[in-house]
Image (cartoon, rainbow, N blue to C red):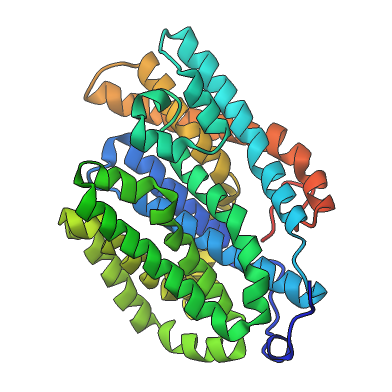
Length: 370
């Protein structure tokens, strides 16, 4: 691919090897998801936890792409796909296999098409259109499918936008608007499946990733940063948090299926920048970079994969309501962290060196860098 044009080089700002606060934000995201699935879904917004996951994924990966483009004048797209496969697929295979074995052992049915769908990243559309196929395989798999569909196409678009830097933000915002328009179209024309479809279909949710990408494109250019500096003050962040709270409290279903994701994505831009790279909320960044939060963040992918099965096993061992349900959920959390650490240590870490061969910044010890 052609070398980047002069405007990108002139506009370059250094991108640190470690982006502060991101591991802690992963921890916040997975804790929201786990709390929601622990019987607290009526008060804890688990779906918003996934939205944060999407946003920080777009922010991180776009930051890495910008750094690679500036260093080499190209994106190694094949290496990008290889890194993602090596990072994500081994834990997914192990989790799916163990889930099938556990469910078979307790007499629960597993549909073969569901297993194929889980491993082929089709779980979101199967969950929408044929939910019985995905029964007992883990309701969390839909979001993995959204991300993989998105990242199959995204690196093919970015070299064009890097060569035409002034188009990057308008083009990405236009794609976000298209996603919103699709959500409105689904609500209008297919109301029976609208909530499921707008919440899980790739074309309805990839804008949550793109808002993170837009934040990265803006932040790592001088002109973009000059603009964003106006929006990362504590007062503006407080306003953005207020918008997020309103999106969680307002229960109109059409709003929840459409504008909710757009407003959350826009509001996350100043919030995430302020608590990570902008440094305008240093106390929050310090909390996110604390040892416990970084540790949970490093385990977040394994925690996301395993928590549904762990909660199921805990409820199977301690069936009942009231105090027994609370005890089962506590046991489920313990099982989740134990199994997730084992997965991280013995499934993810052995592939660190291979990931580095394809350009990953991951450490070969028990530490993951941005």
